[in-house]
Image (tube, rainbow, N blue to C red; front, side, top):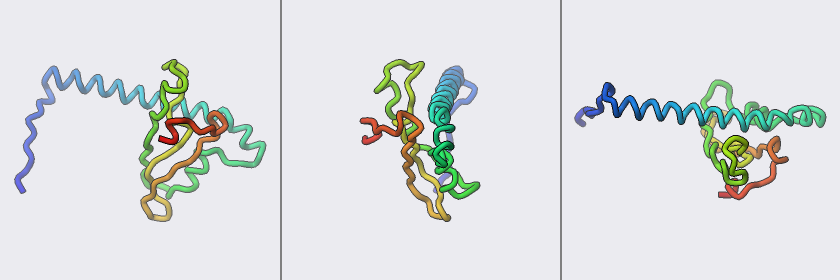
Length: 126
């Protein structure tokens, strides 16, 4: 099989502009993920009062230590239930992704009951 030869010019203005814009989008995604995590963490005292683990703590205990977890659907429901970009929570109140459990690659879905008491959203079903 012949080697793939890229014609991409990483020094071009178009490349630099696209790269810069994409890095801004990635930063925005990280901020939105942090917003959803912070909203869920606000309920930590309530979980602890009841002797329960938070959804993220349950997920961490389920997954194999040191193995990757690829979070999916983390923008689901963003600006759907709440059209305000500054307050809308992404993720449709679920933590979903692909990770390893006892060495087996698995699709995992955890209801994030720390957000809206775990109420199902329309996008959560999609």
